[in-house]
Length: 405
Image (cartoon, rainbow, N blue to C red; front, side, top):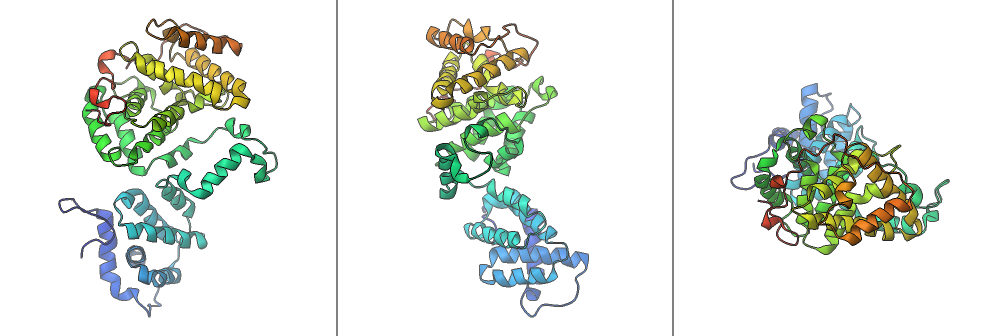
């Protein structure tokens, strides 16, 4: 019996988890039609029934209601096992699921939420990780109201979007921006790949995640994930593993559309705009600083482009609150210098940078009355050698195909 759950190529190996679900379904299929046995199943039988019912409800939509009623009749653990199996389908198999199965999965989740199955919240989060919420009309309306008229929410104590600006977002929410498979492969690149071997992995990653139409917009989510949800240990930082700034620089060079490039840069700098050293993590803003510094002098165009974009954000992101944003950016620079990430002199004294940009940067820092240290403490710049830049490959130049090798 071929899989009705997954799209599997002729020469592609099967999935063990899917095989176990399908095998139990085939073995128990005669027992999945009424009348059902009233005998209490053994633990092993209970596991097999959950496997079979999940496979059945996903691949036999015409019998889905019967399978769910069967599940209601045998459940003895608050649906915990069934939910855990459904979550594995979402996390491990989603990208290969048949389209009709994906639709049926949403129906299953709806049913589980309706009975408050144990762990349904985790199942919802897992499913949301595969959705681009900004294109859902209801979420678009929510965002519009947040920005233009927050009072429509009629929530006590909330009257302005600026209150959200200053509220720190848990790093767990940034996991929602990428699929589980993307998370796994990004972490692999950032932990196990050596800088000297980066090019071949860039090509592999781009083919898997970036070559298909409309996939370019995923770059924005990947950058947010790298900045806010992947914070390497000191051991990794001082090893020869690929640093975060290098992957981000390459991802930026993969942007072919101007609006995607602008959103990707905003993803990189967003935490600078409302930075508060008392509650925010410096690791969220470190990649942008290192990318600007490590791109000089060989790829000074990248540095100039990023610095220009940051200064434009200060003036234009929210003109009503431009001073607050300028203060946040100044505090970000201050914290980066104090913590030894780099010195401001690296930017303000670089001859290759536009004098106009350097003057604007100095004006920004002085206008917020920040006293900024300029000395460089022992820091994290072990990967800033020009001969190891991920931007040197012509095929990964901005506006070209996102092939980094």
